[in-house]
Image 1: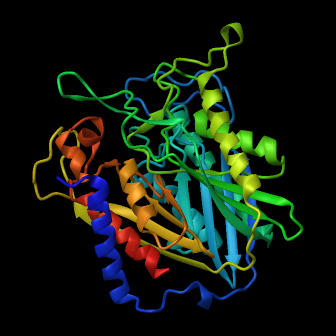
Image 2: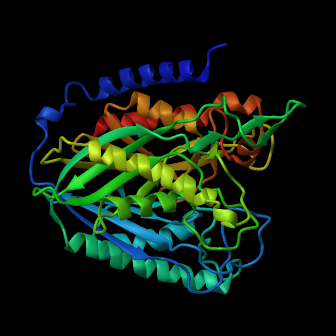
Image 3: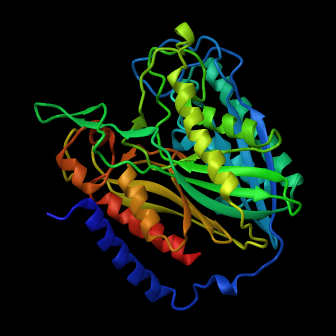
Length: 432
């Protein structure tokens, strides 16, 4: 039987053939409108000032108790020849549910006259951060107030980024980090549990986009890496950005205090940190808390990549596209797939700045799917971003449905949905 990677290659080849049949000879960077690429960045503290319900663990019902490290929303705005792109990364669990996403998205679009395909609204998926709420019947009052403040703060941060744009040059580089581990561990009875699978597929690639002013002063380090922010478990009640938040802060501290380092979570539905489910930040006898250790390890690799990016490009045409697609669904919570005729929707947004591409999904995509998209992308550097523009559960590749497990049970998608998403994402990337 073919491996999933082999199947992915077949999907990619078929997709590329299909794409080129619709876009003959039009794809060429040499035809790009040069223009002047400008960028503006901003960061704003989004740490809750009241105890809140935290996201990520159903077993955790108590409100948060204290703040270990601050949560930040980071904005990177691009403009070239009147075309704009706004990328927002928030140290949050999720922008879960269409109602919450629209509550945040629509005022931003109206305030700045942005099109839907010009805004990536993303969460890092920290399980030590607040859950957002807009429904008074189900949301805690403190979370309702917090979500309202988030809306105001995001608008203010985006305004700062858009009104303080400067000409920039850009470049990109790739490195690797071992802090993530495939979590689908086979039990002795043949079942699947969340644990450690050192032989399982893990995308260790760390992608960094460097922004600098023409005089060489640094502006931003955009990061793409796939790993759950779950080093802290359900017993932890302290607010934290977890390992991804620590990585962002490490990069900002080491490279330049004026630089921002937004992290965009990659396809990692089946990837956890090497140390996961911790109760607290342990500092006994000089012990380095695992959350900080792993975050700093990831941040160290980002710094090395950033410093090695020597060749920077001027110009950089901006193009964007977005689409909501319908795919076959399944009953969420059912451990096996049954053909019920259900359908589900997935939001996909794609953009490019010069020869660096971004593609975002409102799902918790498993790592092999993201790798397939990067393998088939026409761009050398492609940010595959999950938890983007909403949230609609786990998206596993078809072959894992035979194994079952948590990601399959929690998925609301049929096995064939992943292949449809790969094809559509590639078609959109080639259309840019």
